[in-house]
Length: 282
Image (cartoon, rainbow, N blue to C red):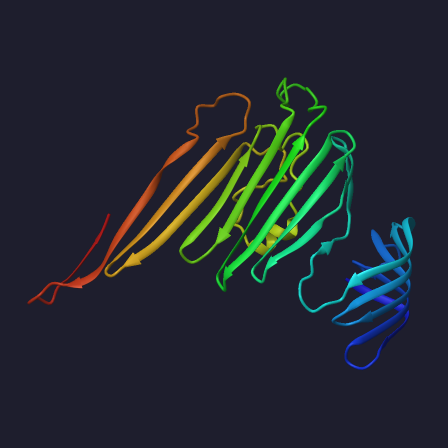
């Protein structure tokens, strides 16, 4: 974020005031969007206030309020986040209002009811957690009661699109247990409206590279993977599994599931009364 203004003052260590301030994602004269505040007062650690607030998209004011009240605390705070807006040829106009909830010091969730003008009400839920310094992940769910279905075209969507549509993704990174699970209600989900998963959520979770390009409408396979590693005394093991769903309309004969792979290693052990060492792997 870039913050500029006619005047920005800091009083002591915990109070900021600004006049004619602008919040924008870039420094250009006409950014994609910007938030203008006539008079801004922020006591750090408390609640800030803004007067004469305007939300501007490409130089056009789309929302204006005489007063704005928001938290300026040093820790996460439950509340309403900035609205999500957009437009797509498949779903029409999109408007969502995220509701953010702090569950604990190590977990939070965001529920976003989203109105799609051509399809109906879409519900999104993402849950983030950090179990330890090196174990973190998230779970994402979206569901739509589709009132129109998709377009029919040659080589495109199925003839009948179910009204109830959903997509689930769960990802975890950890030293012993890792997974990236992806399940969808219909194989044409990505070629129709696609998914509305926040890109920032994926970047924070650091998913496996090039595993699933969910923004690619030509996606043919939806892959899920899991791996568990451990050790006990002289023996270590690794168990991995893969599930692949075919998203193409025609059956191409590819295997859609793979049996779990188990690898067991025996640490090097000295053979008594000899200078030799032995190890084994299965």
